[in-house]
Image (cartoon, rainbow, N blue to C red; front, top):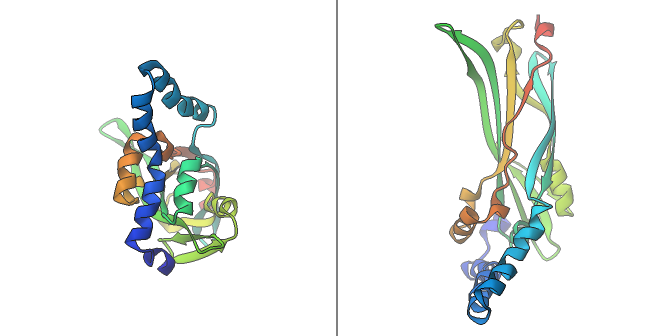
Length: 223
């Protein structure tokens, strides 16, 4: 973490300048090309990304019990665009928001609704530093850090949850129907201000798995 905080303002400003070069190029092209040619040139990168849309996929979530705790394992897949990876390589940290909800089916005055029993939210930060470009994950939930030699290794770890505690079985009823919801997204509001402005209008920064839902399979074994 200290390596990130020690980066000088001038160094970060130089990184932002490189990241925003595309905006300056487009301004020059707009003057040099006809409107039709300019539109084709600007839209070409958008078309090339359409077939390989940046996204986060939650592949599976499995629940089980251990030591009177409800635990889950999950596996996800990250497809991070080069522009976002380039930001990491310029020592800009990415904060991924992980949300886990446990809901139960309830009824009030004849109306069915889902009541939230547990709501867990935490961030995992990905950043790189040093000449050898070491990648580090920092988990805000347990304040632990882990370093990796490649960004692929870091993303693979980020995409995996193992034995994650959701709730104590004493808080749950074995005959109740429970639904587990999980979501992973890039929290671009935690980016430096110049990049927030870009992220608002650039889909490459809109990395969001949306809600993954599964019905718990173990309630009857809690008795």
